[in-house]
Image 1 (cartoon, rainbow, N blue to C red):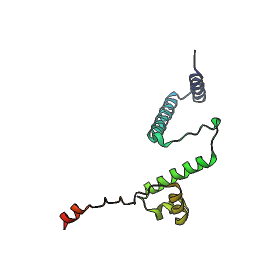
Image 2 (image 1 turned 180 degrees about the vertical axis):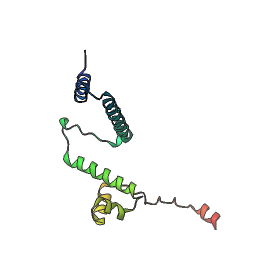
Image 3 (image 1 turned 45 degrees about the vertical axis):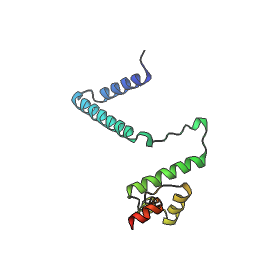
Image 4 (image 1 turned 90 degrees about the vertical axis):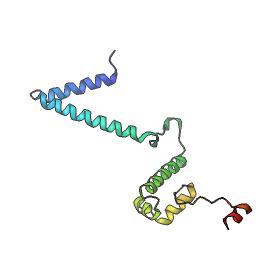
Length: 130
C-alpha cells in the first residue's frame, strides 16, 4: 500500500514532469536543488534540538506559562548573543533596560555575571594566610 506522503511525492513529480516535458535535464537539476534545500532545512531543524518547544494545544495550555517560557527563552538568547551585556540585550530585544532587568529578576534568569560567593575562611586558614 502506498502511503499518503509517497502518493503526494509521486503527484508532485508528475506535475513537475508535465510542466517541463521538453527539458528533463532542467527538471533533474530543479529536483536536485529542492532535495539539497530540504536536507539543509532538515539538518537545521535537527540542530535546534531541544530548543524547539512544541506546545500541544489540544490538551490545553496556560497562556501565562507559555508567555513566561517564551520571554525567558528570548531573554536568555539575547543575553547569550551579547555575552551577558544587558544594555545590548535590551537594545536587541527593543525594550527598556529597566524592563529587561525587571524580567530577569521576575523570572530568576541567570545572567552569567553573578559572582560565585567565595567560601568563608575559617580561623586556621586566616592564620595560615597571614
